[in-house]
Image (cartoon, rainbow, N blue to C red):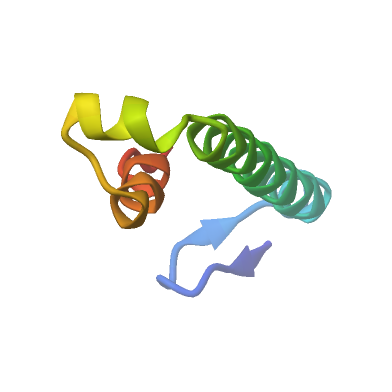
Length: 74
C-alpha cells in the first residue's frame, strides 16, 4: 500500500495501473493536439483559398479568417 497525493491509500495493483495509464494518457493528449492542429490547418487553407470577392460577399476580411479557424476549441 502507498499514499496518493491526497493522502488516500492506493493498492499496488492500482499503482501499477496508474503507472501504465499515465504514458497512454500523455500519448492520447499529443495525438488529440495533433489532430486539432491538422484540422485547423486544413480550415485555414480552405478559407485562404476563398477569393477576395467571395469574402466580401460573406462580409469577411482576410484578417477574420484566422479567427474563424481558431474559434472552436475541441
